[in-house]
Image 1 (cartoon, helix red, strand yellow):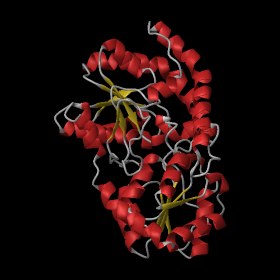
Image 2 (cartoon, rainbow, N blue to C red):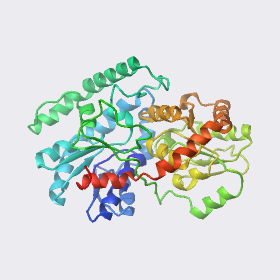
Image 3 (cartoon, rainbow, N blue to C red):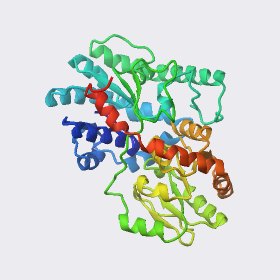
Image 4 (tube, rainbow, N blue to C red):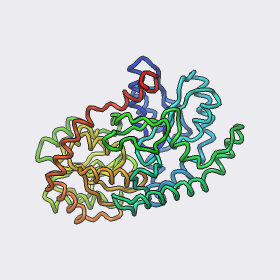
Length: 413
């Protein structure tokens, strides 16, 4: 398996790998060596995908990667494109050395499927969030300025622009790589690859987004895969548990593991929102960061705690809308407020709002008053609380990693 990005891009693959091992198969993950400890902790073999890159340093040096408008192309051009040759070479080597029977590829690992093709090994695609399927018949929210209910015309325009921009920026250098491998030219390579694969595993719940006409030919929705451990960052579980029990359910604030490094004044605004609402808060601020200086009385800040351990005990979960965090929030069954910043987060936020379990305040528009107002709305709307509680057991029953493992092993068609 190959993946790249933040913890939200790594954890689904670790869950699938563990499920494969539980079925008597072997599983290895090729990714940034930064995540080698996570891979070993999960019981998988690790292959290095390039040099070790510290996630926090990488984001602080490339803050535009978390920009609402510029972020996607910054990631593709600066963090993906330069590494395509080593992805191809490392995949070739790993397939040969490990005698791989199948390959599973994240959309940011372009080139791996080409190496698998030349080696004659089946290659499957992993799609972590619905927007990556680029289906014009889906009510997807791609740019940050779209409403939660975009018109069909707006979606078609956005899909056309996405195809045009990615093709102009990426097709030339990517086709040069394919030419060197004696493979034919392709058009709209990034989108074609994202929608490709012998099987295209949608690692989300059908309740979040079902199969619709126009989806990839190999589309299969597995349900959410569950894994959220990061031992080297986790606060002691007894300390977190004591905090959760020592008062009323807190407001839980997190921007995940990537957006946390470009948080700006979010946590200060969140602390002030707690004061406005007279609520205590739990701040999960990310590796190397501290809580806000204006920490409300009775509140606490940790670098990280597993969302599966804290979200269910929150009054409201306030998060950035990353797909892994979104999944844990749905499973917890509590109201949410989403603070989207970039990438798939705007679309995930829109889907949650259409499900009537959430409200949205875009990161660039956050003030203490706006944040407090959104939290108050979801706290006082019984429909949101009841709907969130209704979805929770249905989402919790899903085991996307097990379904994906069965498909990859050829046991489920």
